[in-house]
Image (cartoon, rainbow, N blue to C red; front, top):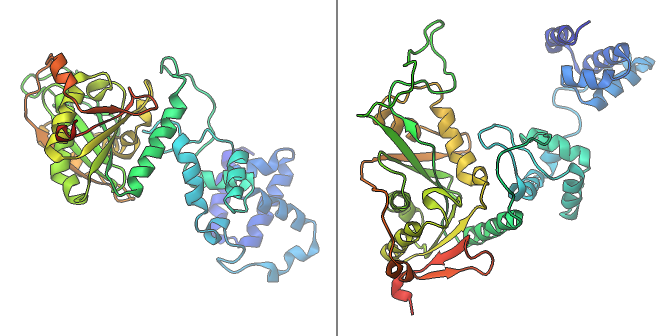
Length: 402
């Protein structure tokens, strides 16, 4: 009998089976299948391997027919995560700085082994085995992945050290109740009745009609959504620009976030930590990025700390998988036919974990090719950190410059 047939039979019977009958049925099928039967039944019926093994043992015992052994609904040993309230939180904290994978995917995966994670959890006074860790990771949305080649260029030798540095800096700011934001520009989007990837529910046989070619409509052009994600508050700000994606546009987006949301959320803020990619309009080599941040620092009186992710690691920026991925999901299958629709779709993005997003259209002009003179560059009140000062630095208000 084919696996799919077995699965359908079990799905029909399952609502009518009690716990004993369920494990007896699973054990009987596993025995009938022979070698590999327990693994097959576990996958098809979504039964724990121990349950199936117990079913096989019960089949060989006469007392298996004793109805007294049937547990009441909800009976049995409670999950370890229910008894140990901090277990999942501690497991997540072990994985978070090292989490890898496509942030657009609903699954995440860890590059640490379950045995290593179990060792570290046991050091934190949690009594767990590597098998339990594997089960917990599955519940939390992680999956085991094989290696896959990606075009990221040469891996920087200080890549992991920079990840850990950013994580440590972030924890320090959050502990002191100082704002930490993740920033980036989402890819440019054509405005008009064009196909947008994904599907949405509509009456059967009535798909929304869009243009068959993606040619720029001059009067509508393109938009660049620049996002600011507040890591502590789980709120986002998106500035939808209709002109060039320049460093002036990037800093203006941060400025708008501060005066629209940040200032109210952090009335006692004395400093701000920005985590950003190493390239683009907010790249660490951009002179205009630093001169514009100096203006922002002078306006607000805050010290602006910046940490850049190493080259080729932009997808690991928090904003990618905590804001942009949900925006993409929210507008999937919907043509972005106007600026108003784009703004409303972004602002309408929410998650079960309470993500809240504000969005505005930015009609300002941001010309390219603005040159920063040596005098302007030397006037920046810049302090470089001891570790990778090119990636990690702070800009202080010029009034404090000695």
